[in-house]
Length: 460
Picture 1: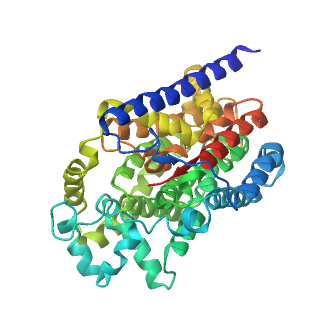
Picture 2: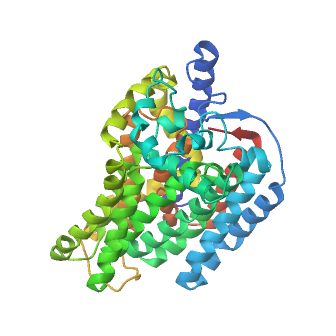
Picture 3: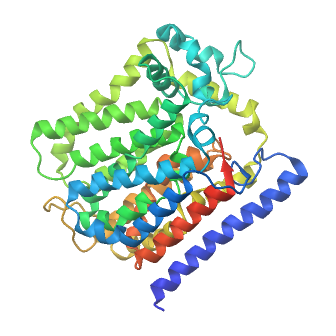
């Protein structure tokens, strides 16, 4: 057994120990004090061994991707790979959601008392509701918003209001929207990795992005939809800062990146931290400083669109965030112990990204230390792979990890981070491209996902 494989196993053992400790300590705290407000700490879930209509499909997808995914990822044409990865991710996520059945797994997810569809009727006058939105955030205000609506800017709820206005009413359509859009994030991350670290790295990462344990929470969660919007903002930024594109193609890409990042910030306050990942993308880009400066007006123009629209209708993002902090501590967020969740959140992340990602992150750290010179800007043909691309991939992955750790230390994400941190967690998965023996690691990922989905009833 090589030294690198031993280090992988040590990383997996440490991750498993973290999860086990979070389970045991969490159970003791919950039994003694009832302050965690989760039934199966550290996850927001209940012990409920079950199978369902999605079980055969989930097993079939797992076997197919683990057995044939790495080979297909190497051989498929690039654009076909992106489409195939999305399709496989869609199949994986739908099958996992349907393990719980249509109603419990999809249609009823976004209709519970704290979810977005419960307040669609209050948006009969959209501009008026947006002007009045902040007046209902605090728990003791008149007709306070349910927890998820109060905890997010109105862009999140407005998405489901617009779906309803378009005739796509009810939890089934809302769940299908979140799964269909959310799974496109797989292609966005692959595209970004291919642009910044070479297509060979992206091909090696593809099966791991498809077979992600995070799919348990993408289907059907609004955070899966948020994940995709944030991921495509990063992908468009990567498109703008790499290769030899014309001025207008680059301008369109950077405008789109700004537009989607602006929308991201109006879907979830915490996703403003994606600016850290964006900064890493710019650092890894292969364009000259003058090109970056020339693209800045287009970035700012795109970034201004959604803030301007929401501000003109009367919603103040900063005021909303200030009131959210107060509301957070008025509820269970003020009771849940920071001393437990500041590290138990990371155990939730291990479950979301899998043990293979823990091993991959260890290799990413080693690659970054070993080949720092590879991070210097370089001009090379788009999509090619050079020595040192593992360090470039590592920086992208560790940038996402840094954003996640900032969110953790803020204390504004205590519990439920297996769902809340999906947008960050997805960017950790490409670290698996650095692993050898991909089929074995994919089998580990699939086994963890299937066990979680069949032994626990996850919720939010």
